[in-house]
Length: 124
Length: 197
Image 1 (spheres, each protein chain N blue to C red):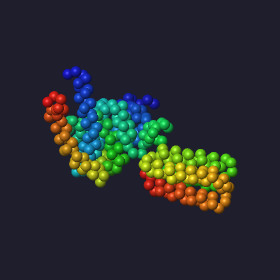
Image 2 (image 1 turned 90 degrees about the vertical axis):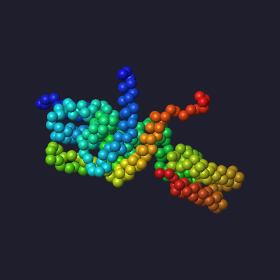
Image 3 (image 1 turned 180 degrees about the vertical axis):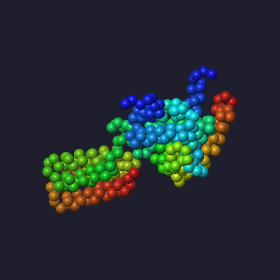
Image 4 (image 1 turned 60 degrees about the vertical axis):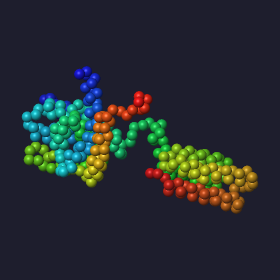
């Protein structure tokens, strides 16, 4: 493979990740609060959403400032206390909205990718 | 006293250095988050070396760039831009053009001697310019405001002065001036109420 090809692939993945990462992070907190390392581990395990882990902390910081998540400290049996991230009502609303629009978005992209582009008439 | 090489400390310093454009509280929060991540990961995976943990966190430059991008889109942080930036122009408080327009007339009524009317006119022109460049009104409202609070009173008073030539202090002139003042005040109140946040 040409080096340029892998760079372009990485760029496509990075663009997609940029758009959906925060909603995936919110989704990880849907059922219970999670602490940072736990969130990063889940993203890592997903494969496609794995990212340079440190970049998730600025995202979490913004979610907190935008009042989509709240944080609480909890003691742990091993090691230092963990900072847990939990959804707020507006965080849950943002996640619900994304959950609502995502299937249509995904299907539209699939359609563009799987069918030939419509004829313009010139080539009929 | 020189401590032995501490890769974690060096890494956090590198993040701090790369993120120097961030507000101090954001920068400290980022460094604290990363330090906490390293501590927790060390506790959970005692076998992992600091080098491995830091490699997973990624390049300090990438993290700092992400933090700057996140800070840029957050509300409350002003967007970058010089004085000539159109986004900054027109951010004058909406009261300023309204007061300049309305007060220009009583100013002239009080200071009717020579430089007074000139200053009053300049006041009114500045008010019109500020009103037109303001972001607080639609074009239709601005046009209406300029006509009712600027053009009409100026034309009426000017033609009154030119035709009668009488002193501004006599009763009909006073009534005329007060009428125009009421029109300007009414327009200003209407503009104030219909302004956009």
